[in-house]
Amino acid sequence: MPADALGLEATAWRDRGRHVDLLGEPVFVVDVPAKAEERPPLLVIHGFPTSSIDYAGVVDALAARRRVVLLDLPGFGFSAKPDRPYTMAGQADVVVALTEALGLERFALLTHDMGDTVGGELLARQAEGGWPVEITTRVVTNGSIYIGMAHLTEGQQILLSLPDEQLPEGVGSDPSRLAAALVATLAPGHADVDMLPHAEAACFDGGARLMPRLVRYIEERRTTERRYTGAIETHPSPLHVVWGPEDPIAVRAMPEHLVSVRPDATLTWLDGAGHYPQLEVPDAWLAAVLTALDG
Image (cartoon, rainbow, N blue to C red; front, side, top):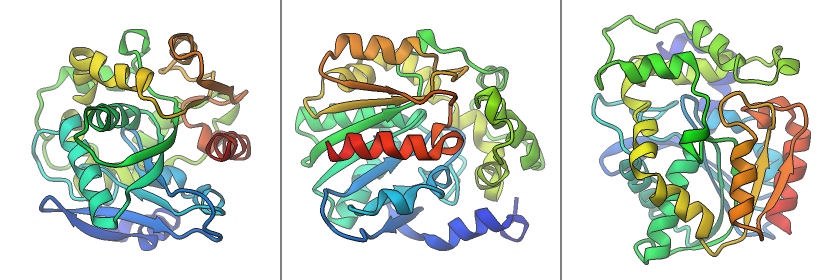
């Protein structure tokens, strides 16, 4: 969809950010300064198929005591959407380039959905000495950490059945259909959450046509799970798990298993929330995340 078709919320979020050239592509970045600089900065990595707009309603509260940096990974939101293969290693390369461009050397990490997988790759690199930063703490939220436990949606399965190539022009141009699919991932009690701005950002500049390419991260999780999940489990930084237990995709057995193999991790359930707890129960989500970051 073109820029002039965006609604007010998506437009307002786009106006908060800027494009930074990273590895030869323009990447959309929102960099929110701290109201009172007391804590290490926070780097936020979003999931599939949405973008950093998922945090539009909570980012200012997150920034009360720390700088908050969010990006739209290439292929997502308001970043460049070239027609090429997308890999977790490639997305991690962009995150590393962003930290270098912004001079981020010590920070906390917050991830969601596919962002958990990108985060796993980053943690693996840092543990191997390939990413010279300090991760002070990390918060993992609803994502398919253990892909064998995931209940993939019908839409995800359809996308995975398609060739790894861009869809024909005009296909998937209506964000209202994607919005309805996103609502289906929420807890039943939150079906009134407006997911249209998130779908508009996803469909922006032909984004819907790229989804058969972007969804391949699920295949990577299957073939390379021990690298990503192993790093999530074993990285020495403190681990906090914040989860919507009514998630129909990343079911509650996932965080339960994660904390069983990482006994020092904390697990906070956000009652009545599904796959997007930051949108469904923002106050409870903020309380849990800020407690994890400030603990």
